Structures are given as C-alpha cells and as structure tokens.
Amino acid sequence: MVQTTAGAGRALYYKGFEGNVLGNKQISVKINPLFADRNILNEVATFNNTLRTNYWGAVYDLFDKIKIDGKYGIQFDTSLNRPDGCFNASEIFYQKRGCCLEQTFLFLSIAVNGGLNYKQTDVIGFVIYRLENNSFDIHACPGIIIRPALKGEYAKISHYKFSTDSQFRNEVLNIANLPSTDDASLVLFDLTYSKIGAQHRHIVPLGNDGIIAAYLANSGAHFYDRKNIAEAVKRWEYSLRINDKELLALSNLINHAHENNNWEKVMLLTEDYSKIVNVVDLVRRTEASISEGTLDIAPLFSALASDPKCTDAYNFLIDVYRRAGESADALSLLSSLL
Image (cartoon, rainbow, N blue to C red; front, side):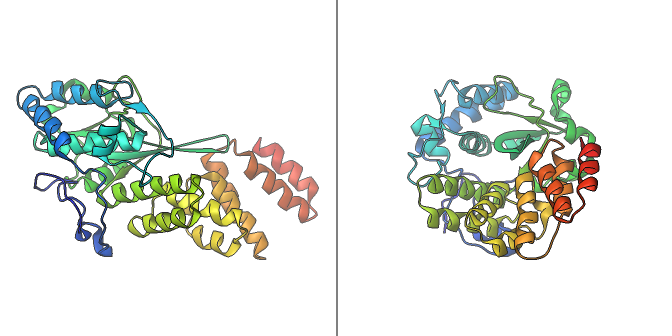
C-alpha cells in the first residue's frame, strides 16, 4: 500500500491515500504527494508550536516560507529533472525548486500534519484553469476554509465565488467533509503571489482522488516532454481512472489522440463535453466528428460561450457553413458573433 501522512482524524487528506479513500473505485495507489519525511516533520513541529498561540501568525509564516523566493528559497521551476515527473512535498522541500502544484503539496502537507484542521479551519487544494484567446493554462494553490469563530477580517478577502455561489460553496464544503453553511469564508493562498486572497475565476477543489490525479497528470506531462509518450499516456489514463474530471490529463489525452489523427479516440474522450474546459478540445470534437462522418457543431458554441475570443471556433463555424454552400449565412453568422 502507500505511505500515509502523519496524524489521524476526520479531515480531508488525514487518512493518506489508501485505496478505500478513492470513492467506490477501490483503486490501490503507491503515490503520496503529501509525503512528509523527517525534515518535513521538523517543520510541522515548528508550525504546530506557533499555531497553538498565534494561529494567523503560523499560517502567514508558512505562506512566506513556501511562496516563490520565500524563506525556504524555493524557485519556480518546471524543468524535466524529476525522476518521477513530479515532486512530492518532501522532494520540493529538499530540491528548493518546483511548480505551483508541488508548492501546494508542501503547504498542504505541513498544514494538515501540523494540526491546522483542528482550529476551526480546513485546508484544501485547488486547481485553477484560465481561458483566454484560445489558450488553456492550469495552475494550483491551497486555500483555507474559515468557519465563523475565526472569520473576522479575513471575510473581506474571501473568494468571491465561495461567498456568492451556493452550489460552488457546497461543493467545496462537501469535499472538505464539512456541513453546508453560508457562514464561512474561503481564502486562497496562491504561492506564486506576494499576498494572500487571490480571486481566480475558475477554481476546482481537490479531494484525495483529485490530489493523486493531479500528481499523475503533471508527471505525465513531464514524461511527454521527455519523449516517453507511452509512460505519459499511461499516467494520464490512470489519472482519469482516479478522477474522471482531471482537467490536464483529459486535455492532454485529447491532444495526443488529435495529433495521431485518432478521431475515434477524440470522440470517445469528448463524449461528455460538459467536462471539457479547454475550448480547443471542443473544436477538436467537431473536427473529429467531421472525419468520422457525423457533423457535431454544438461544441463550437460551447467553446464560444466559454471564450468569446476563440478564433478556432469562429473559423470552424464559418468553414462548416461554407462547406454546406451557405457562404452568405456564414458571413452573417460571423458578423453577429463578432
């Protein structure tokens, strides 16, 4: 089985990553992104001692240590020099370099093992995605759910979506194993920023399965860049088995199938395109449908709804209308969309 995080209790991430915490999939894994070695446990002890007397002092100090160019001296790095394709918490601490996801692992490991979840707060990881002008970017950061007893001034920097969108708030609370309430705040600790309270637009909370799936998706991307395509695809597929909503793994598999003109695979991966956030992947579904002899333009409109500046979707729509011999309608459609 797996190495488990220190501590025991009710909260998210406390049980480590045994197969039975991955829902009804019963998938046995040997990965612990939050693994805490002796060096990490020394930091945990320091964090816990401060937490007992100065809660926010401990949290701010942890943020200042782990952020890029912070007290730990961690430098932002996405180079290929990673034996397993992705660092766990202990490895980024030792290497003093890493990406936003690896920083998030380190923050979660110290905070959870240090007892933060016993202080009227709960720490949780998030994946952030950005859509703009055909581009798709994945980011990650930790956040802290603050319940009434400790909200105070921090309610002012609560994430706007958590404060205003009850569906999203309940999704976050459910993953954190907390009861539904509208009297809580969520503060993001983006470790690539100099201050807390980031207001990212598109954020997705990570449960135990999400943490492991994100690790696998990220490591798969590194193996792909090393030209080890078979290992990359294996990890992305494993990632989706664990969490079928893993954004990076799904998008990379779609891209791989597209590059190899495997239209049947593209159609299969995009069958439920409500799960897809990369607008280019939606365009690829339409392209695949044409190659498979069944025209499906609905994904193009979904792409434009997500990113009104998605030129690929515009161009494909115009091309579809023109192929149908409806050039006038195509020009009219383009004018109305623009």
